[in-house]
Length: 404
Figure (cartoon, one colour):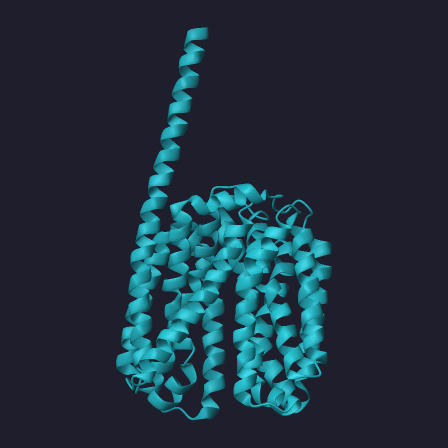
């Protein structure tokens, strides 16, 4: 593995930890600032807003710079945001600091994905992206549980300060290991021109709707496990750790399979996701079956992420591709909002905790259709390119014959 990928994975670990660890520290933050737990819960929404705003904005500002410079600058924002969060004297300042922290999130993954695929041969591009994203999945296995424990035993401020240190380590790694020439300087006009391509929008729609299936279920995973599967609350953390292991395995496997099968793998993966969720809804009352199906669901769902991230960059057909890459990260957060909102809607109708699971299955079916459309468009694009190359070769051959 190129050491530059390790630096990107460390950054992804820090970003994943800071995004999700707040969910495990809600009571401690509420007590420390003298506010309600529900008020602290809004920090999660504030972070999502920051991701959606920052992904296109900071990427557009950094498009003219080499990726390494942009990534280092984004990590500086990340470090400052986490440091200010750790020192925040009031709830309002913590909200502002969390939004600042989130601004770097989408852009880092967007620019980082482009840089990662330039560190390896073209046929290993998806695998390189998956190695970077592994840092994010490991955050759920190691960073979040450890951060939650530290918050409970010591201080939530210490956790956020520690994450800032992870950002500093990332900066050092980027400067030492990421080649200055990794990726290309982009041009904002050509980057924006990529959004004229229908295939780019198809991939973004696939991300927003297909991956909403993940969040429709994961947003309510705790009550699903306790109310439906009948697990005690003490078992939730170990099960979520298993889920995190599954997502890590899936991400690594998806990198290899994605390079080989592309969006055909995504279509099969989403259809498999729909089947797993249907089985989950029917067997959720059996604890062992519920846990196994949940872990398999996470494994398959995360296996598709690197494929889609690489696919949107290739669909852009422009030098660089950082802006569409970052836009796809924003689309993942839109998927989060859509999935969680639809889950909340069916719960508000008193349909029970199996309802969000069925919603997820339906969204996965919709995603399967979109993946097939993207696959079809991709095949047409490749056929057109092959035809153009064949025509060029014939023209060159005719000229050589004439000259002879």
